[in-house]
Image (tube, rainbow, N blue to C red):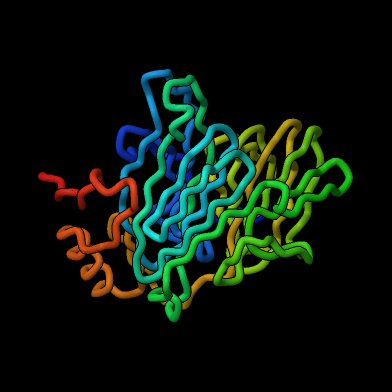
Length: 294
């Protein structure tokens, strides 16, 4: 990252009873390519009396990407999907015109100690697909492209890069890469990237232009084609981005769209509970948040 434009620090945010580190959106940078929302969950230890329970809630105009390092989440949605997300797998749900889902600790783990650690990401849809029918795909860890170059380990979580393509069915030109290194070494991969790019340091550190950056920092590049830096030993980083959209995207709670009218329609629809419900998880739900009183 010899051309760092912006440094974003994780900021504490609450998703129900669970605290996360929020990276995007940021007031000075709302999106990186089509990536519009990134939360770093954990690492956190849950006792036998604690569970990860994100109650049923709606989305429009985006795809969600859940990628765990530790732990387990049971995904349920209004399409009838019920899938356990385990470390290394990619859970990819496209909301389109609207979908409801929940994320909970699986039943068989609800009285056990467990660790939770991972990334939850929203990828905005192209304008012409914002009202598409909702879809769901789950790609197991063994199907995610992995390779080594010298002492570097690569994983293409989603999108296209390095002449490879992830099986995650994305709807715009993007990439999300994992890079691991056990030793300090130089990296120059700008010729493999395109559009906008950001580099998130999960563990370890990188050095660029004499500056050292560590965990919980997101570095946004001025130009993705100049992605050159030194990765320090025992580091894990994620590089993501892609071609930005020509139109602005608006966010209201869990809704993303290029149209404020579509967001308002979804908001009113959720308030009166007209979204399709999740079979077996119909009772509880997250209400639309009340305005904060000043």
